[in-house]
Image (cartoon, rainbow, N blue to C red; front, top):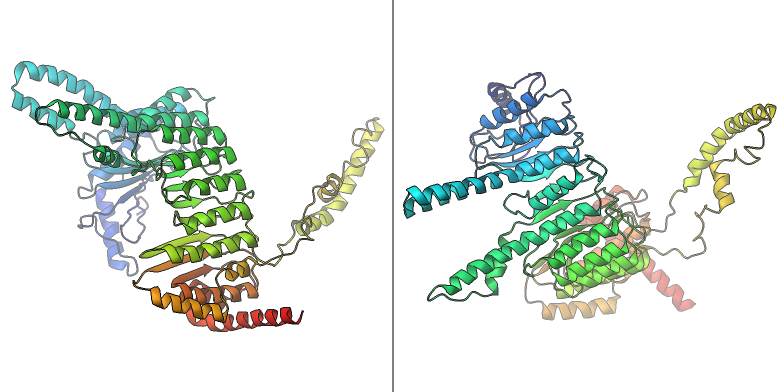
Length: 631
């Protein structure tokens, strides 16, 4: 049926319901599911009534003609037809809802049955701060109404009912009265300070963040033209989120202590209370106005929150493409240092962080008290060997489980530091450990990148004649009216000529520097000579008492590696397993010189292919040793 689009998927099953020309009936979905169940052999759909209770995705995206009335009917009827399902993902992106449409959505959500968990996505729907304020206020409205109703009922109950009845009423009031919004995504809408209602929106954002029972666990505000003011509002909400909980706990403790025979509580109660507050996953990617000021505001909020050191605040903090520099990185480093474990996943890609900022973060977590599950610093060209070596030291101490430094400026010395950190982790690890380091896109190979001027030269050769002809024609026309001096003699030069004239062409600025292979530098920190290898095996066999293992994944995609680099990695993989008990997997995709067999062997898919590569590398090492002796 044209009204229904059902897409099979792996568990949990996703059922995409699209309102195309009118209301979609539940029997249409049942017929579509029946056809899929009968015909599908590779990806069967689990029935909605099954015990697994799959999530249902209501896809209303790309529907610009969707009216508010139809929107309400679509959501209410679809959710109402699935009594056994409690999780729904609603996507309204690119439907040009505007403020009125989003207000209608909040109204329809307030009428749903209890106990639901919803993920709401509303990308690029022409929402303004006023519309966003309505969304945030709608999420908090139930609590406000509940308070007012509770006060009225308390007064009435005190006058007409006994104590048992009053207690029963209070217990009923504590029960949830609306669905749980697990994820809210309002990305790609303009919420800048110049828009009307921005102050009110930031105030509602603060109130939402400080209310852990109503705030979604995942909050996406990517590419929304936000600035430091938004970070300050979130920061104030974070402080109140934990400090209010601490105050409530202290008041309860004081009342308990005042009671006869009460036992005083300890710090473990505060830790347990902080652990009950759900973590916040905050995504602010693509808001370049945030800058260092916004990052510092969030860092100050972390330091100002009265939380236990054992509890985290952010499950994910995404500040990528926010123009964060070394000052912002330093502020976040101080927060990590003062509140260990406050951020589980920190994403700072596509910013202006250099070696100084990367070293600050590495220093903050190098003491071993803080462990970050994921640290992403991709596409920060200012991070080179110094910053990479500092981060390698943190990885070696076990404080970073996954590190991503793609498309930075890490070279051979930095790669050697990461090779050393593999040995450090192997010597200090207990039990089974998995470490991931991604250095893809860094200049670690000896093959040269294709120069951009080759494309420019082709374009210049093709257009030079056209530009010359157009320039002469314009000059001739201007000369007739006496304005030939406006253009000057060099205004029609090509881009290459302009770069040469201004000294901007820097393709060969490092031509005199020796090129070292990062793969061989990484291998040199691990691969031992025969004598050293024999001693290492003896010491390892004497000290190995458990079945601990380390799985180390290394990303080396698009690093301009040659065959010698692949052979060096093969030797590293073999010796890492024999000498340190480390399972090393290297991803060398997108290195055009390496054959598919080598790529599969290094990634662990075909371990038998490592033998020939290992033999070639050891022969090359022996040839270098003989040459050095002769010299």
